[in-house]
Amino acid sequence: MIWLRYLDRVLRGEATGAAALRNGDIEQPAGGLTVLGAILGAIYGLCMGCYTLFQGRHASLLQAFATVIKVPALVFLTLAVTFPSLYVFNALVGSRLSLLSVLRLLVISLTVMLTVLASLGPIIAFFSASTSSYPFMLLLNIAIFAVSGSLGLRSMLTALHRLTPAPAASPLPAAKLAEPVAHAAGPLEPQVGRQVSREVRTVFRVWVVVFGLVGAQMAWVLRPFLGSPDRAFSWFRPRESSFFEAVFYALHHLWR
Amino acid sequence: MKSLLLCADGIIHGDVRQDQSEPLWRSSLQRLGIVILFGGCYGATMGAFGGVGGERWLQVLYAALKAPFLLLVTFALSLPSSFIFNALYGLRADYAQVFRTLLSGQAGLTVLLASLAPLTLLWNISTGGHQAAVLFNALMFGIATVGGQVLLRRSYRALLARDARHALMLRLWGVVYMFVGIQMAWLLRPFVGDPDKPVAFFRADAWGNAYVALFQLLAHVFTR
Image (tube, each protein chain N blue to C red):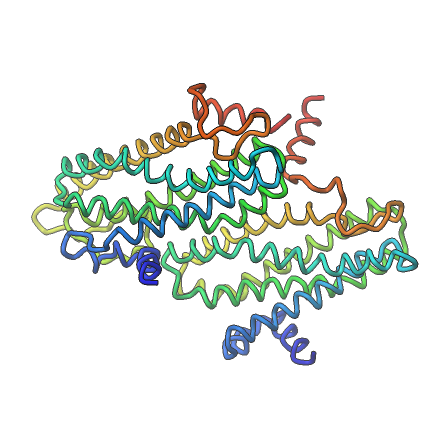
C-alpha cells in the first residue's frame, strides 16, 4: 500500500517537485518503486501477450509468459546500460547529485513510463484480441512505447533542470513538463546563467536520444515480444537485421 | 425513471450545478442508466431495419444491446490512460470533475442519438437499400458525435477557466476515444442487420482490424 502512495507521489510530481528537491537531492526511496514498476510492466506485457493468445497458435501461452517477463526486463536493462553515462554526463555539467540520487531519478522517470504503458494496456489488449495483422500490432506497440518513453524522459528532464545548479530552482509545478524553467537569475550573472543552462539542456537532450536508441536496440535484442505468426516460438531470435529495418518493413507490409 | 429523464434534461441543458451537488457514484449510475436506456432505444430503432417479424426481433434486441455496449466499453478502455495523463500533467485534483464531465458527454451523446431515432424510423419505413441504411445511421452517429462534442466543450468551460491545460487533455481524450471507438464499432457489426442475411449477434467475417481494412482498401485504390 505504501508503494502505491509512492507511485501517487511520483505521478503528482511531488517526488521531483520543488519542495522535495530543496536539499538538492532526491529522497524518494526507489526499492518499492522498482517492484511496482516491474508489476506495471508485466501488466502491459500481459496485454501485449493477448495478441499471441488470441491467435491461438502453438506455444502461445509460453510466448505470452515470455512477453510478461520481457517488458520489465527491457526497461530495467535499458536503465542498467544507460545509467553510468547519465551519471557521468550529469557530473560533467556540474551537478552534485549523488550516485543514488541519479539512480532514484531514473527509476522515478521509468516508473512514469511504465505507468503510462500500463494505463494504455487495456487498449492494446483490445486491439490484440481483435487484430490478426502482425505489422499493425507491431507499429501500434512501438508507437505506445514511444509515447510513454517520451513522457517518462520529459519528467526526468524537468527534474534534472531543477536540480542542476542553474540560477534557481523555481517553484514550478511538476505539471509544466515541457516549459523550460523560467529562472529568476541573480542580478550579477543573468546571461552567464542562461548560457550554462542551455548547454546543460543540450547535454541532456543528447542523452535522451541515446536512451531512446539504447531502448530500441535492447528491444531488438530481447525480441520476439509479439511473436510473428509465421515463425515458431523461441525465447530469443538469432542476430539479424535491425530495429529500424524491421519498422520500415512493417510499415511497408501494412499496405499489403 | 422520472429522475433519469430529469437528469437527461439537465445534461443536454448543460446544467452542471445540479450535477455537482450529488455524490459521484449516484450521478455516475444515473448517467450509466441514461446511456443504456437512450442508447438502447436508438439501437433498437437501428436494428429494426429488417423488420420485427419472425426471427427479426432478435436483431432488434441485439442492436439495442450493442449500441450502449459500444459506447460504454470504449469509454472504459480509454479511461485509465486519461486518468494517468491528467495526473502527469498536474490535473489530478480536478479528475473527479473531469470524470463526471466525460461521462455526462457520453450520456448527452445517447440522448441526442435517441432524439434522432424517429428520423431513422421514418427512413426504415420509407426506403429499402441496406447500404443506404448503414450510411444513414453512420450520418446519425456523426451528428450525435458532433453534438456530444458541443456538450462536452460547454461543460468543460469551468475546467478550462481553472487551467488551460485541460484543453490538451480534452483533445487527447478525443483522439484516444475515436481510435478505440472506430475499432469497437467495426467489431460489433452488424448494427443494421442486412435483411438478406440471417440474424446474428456477431458476423463471422467482422473479426478484424478496421484500420488494416482501411489501409488495404486505400492500397487497393491507389495501386490499381
